[in-house]
Length: 253
Image 1 (tube, rainbow, N blue to C red):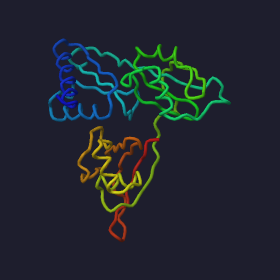
Image 2: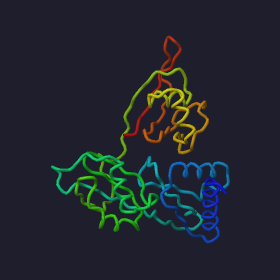
Image 3: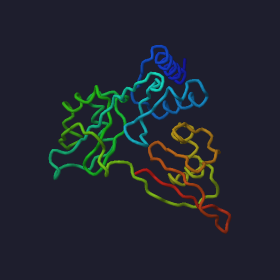
Image 4: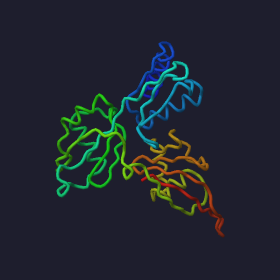
């Protein structure tokens, strides 16, 4: 059984258990490819949409937890098992400007499983990390440094406004609304390198893996490029004299 079939079977098992026992079932944090697979199963009617809820802790999260079960049928709702940890330098003056990879690497060094960690939001010398509640105390007690910076870790109730998702508006001129054309311009890559992004499953539209690089974006689509970021496509705003089009996008920052 290949990996995709195993994932599909696991989702079906969790849905059937939730349906049979009238009890919510939760996954750990899903990688984007896995949540895309689940959304595809919902779209095809293999799992009812009313039985699947996704949450990563904030709107637009890339890594999410899936909850199987229907609060409408059960008459009650069970919250998601996630918390937010804030990581900040013990001494602001000597703190480094650390990257997403730095924080993730330090957590991996503590032998924390990747699927117990959601998104990591970095602002300046601080970071906010979404983790499963069962891992929060372990990380709080054991994460003492990130690279050369000694840090403190504390549980917080919400992201501060400056660490939440912000959208940066931009426009560009392209020959068409084809996905590969827009991806190529966004990442400044050749056609062959852009095709490789599709082949290696790094392109998603509205949370689903996109392998058809000749498809066209529609107004409101959310385009994600692994390792680069994601944008909301707002459509065509004008046409040039050379019959190219001007498009409007909002990038998550």
